[in-house]
Amino acid sequence: MKYVNAHNVLPEELILMIQKHYQAGYLYIPGKKDHTPGQQTDYKIELSKRNQYIYLKHLEGRTNGQLRNIFHLSESSIRRIIFKERTKHQKMKTTIEEILPLWELENEQLIQIYSSAWELNHSYVIKMYDDRKQLERNIQISTILSACNIPVAEIVPVKTGEKYAAHNNVYFLVSKKLPGSNITEIKNPAMSYKMGRAIAQLHKAFIECEKEIEFWDNSLLQEMKGWVRKNLANHAWQIIEKEDYDKTVELLENIYDCLPKQLIHRDVHFGNFLFCEGELSGYIDFDLSQKNIRIFDICYFLTGLLAEETDNAFTQNEWIESFRSAVAGYESIIRLSAEEKRAFPCVMKCIEILCAAYFIGLKDKKHAYDAYHVFRFIQSCENDITGI
Image 1 (cartoon, one colour):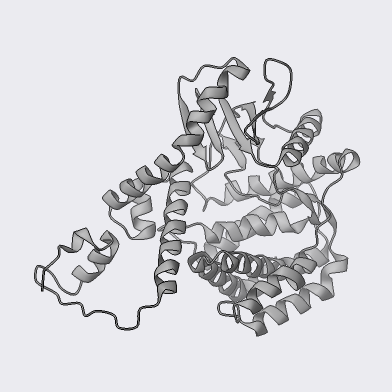
Image 2: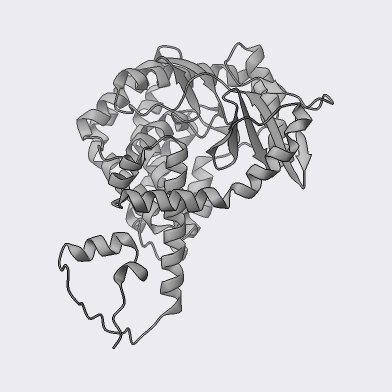
């Protein structure tokens, strides 16, 4: 039998796990008799999704050391993954460099900051879209919000006057970069208070958008009873138990008609609400904006804090404090109804069930289980939440 160096055939994270039990010797691994091709494919899918997620977190500003602790990999593995993922995006970067003359902009420094967005010379952001109608709607939203004195990115037209450019069925929008950056101090209750105020300010301005633009009138309840249930049932209720789903949706159905609906952002987190020196500096990314229950945005932000992959997770008391702060911030501008306050735990559990169903559909079990753990966390906090 020929011996093979483990570094040539095994992922480094697996080697580190083995070394906890056995080091510096020959280890016999028997051949697998019942080889199932699907299992190997699933592993590759999971690995690919993990690597994409690591790269996204890198773009959001996480250090290699932080990523090492979160994903339990060595820093050399993190660097290798980031390099491979960056190489995949090189083709689009080359395309952007070719079309920059349309805006009479020179590429001195083009840095990817998100999967579909690049920063140019620390002064501009160029974002690509596959859906032209979505892009044009986002332009309309930005125009209306700007007229309401809401800080949004200023659009830079191409030199011929159009607000965006098309290239090979992909659409590109350039805007001036807003000051500020992603917040990493997510446990700071003062920032949660400011986020609550920022959400309420945006909700007030969104009323004006509803008067001029037709939006998708979505229903969280119909989503839960539709594709969410279908995805969970198709995967035999592997992660979210049917009993938990039934109880949560039944409660939502009982209170849904009492919850105020309006246009919401739908993707509220510190990456889309920018702060500069502790103060709100602007809103970005209205790709998912829709009509829905208005507390969805607050609930999404708060559950998102729990979903953040860090090596310093929230304790129950820390999160409840952030919860109170966000609600207080929102109510400093818009009062919440008693029905909305009672609905907080139900809506947050629905969001996590929805997220689990979404990731199950992508065969991304890791993030589906993450959503399940947040669901359980919310369950453990229900009495504290409804008492706010």
